[in-house]
Image 1: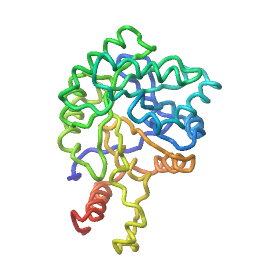
Image 2: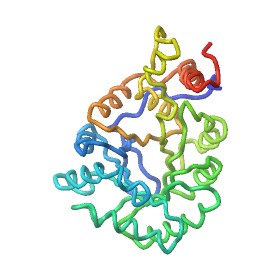
Image 3: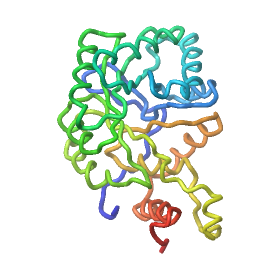
Image 4: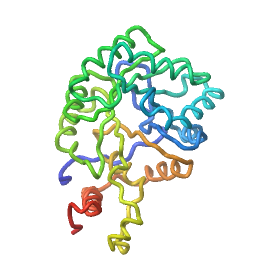
Length: 287
């Protein structure tokens, strides 16, 4: 599956910056979402990460610590020092605006949102939701400069990212769901680095914990991948601009940062992670 496919020679670093097309926004290739400890937000910022993601509605409770951390960050650094992407899963246009306003109302020191994201989108509702978000961006709604989509449909992602319908797209690619390597990435590669950014999410969906490896009788393997190695898996692909991460603690954040100092994965390593996940789910044998 991975032989002959291009891969990065160096993994993106927290202090790197990529420009969201058509805007003045410069974001780190690492984006922080759900955390359990609010201090992770400031710790990430100190590592050079300036990109944060929160939900405006459906997953509101699980982002509580992230919101607290962002409010603390806003109290000590200029608002323009970091970028906030906010997702709404509401599909009806008349309701799509309210959740974003509620986010600003709940965050002390943050009265603007940089990126408005339509969460969990499929092809059937994509255009309608993008029309609403583009309207708000054009009207400088809550200071937004860009619109994005988190895709649950790779065909919709392919259309939106190759036709420039969004400024940033969040797509799924992991050892448990590697299909993007054949049905999405070739189309993104054809853009030759131009066009909307593609950030990965659910990177850890294919991770097999060490305890499960032991259960499988594979404790003697030369390499038992850690969770952070799966961010390396995603970022080895040059079509993936960055990753949305959910480090619960500062220790987990440190593990992610340390993993990025390692080399990109080889084709053999990529295949290994996929096969290990398949073995763990009973779908294959590890050769």
